[in-house]
Image (tube, rainbow, N blue to C red):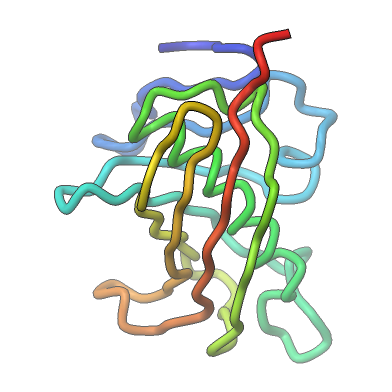
Length: 154
């Protein structure tokens, strides 16, 4: 637990069952743009990464900006690697990311990316998921699939 290769991944005392998902360097993208994020493994084997949209995450329609949703999706791939596979998220890179916007994310309500690992090979992790909002995950914001390359060992 604690800090692992640039990430802070430790239980969040204010949110039992959740872990903090933060970069140790608060001057980088995640902290500056996304704000507080939490992660946990779900009972069904998926990973849930949660962010808390606020005004700075909005577009001119007062909805979550698409770029924020895309960033959440990309970050969720690495959170899933760490949470589900105990992989090296810091040394990995996104090779491919495909997304489909389905609905608008609303401000001031948690926005969650739910990710499942489809296959893991020696060098790659294949994942897919959805971005949802609401207590029962019924408000679908986006769906996605992605491929992450594990660290090369250099």
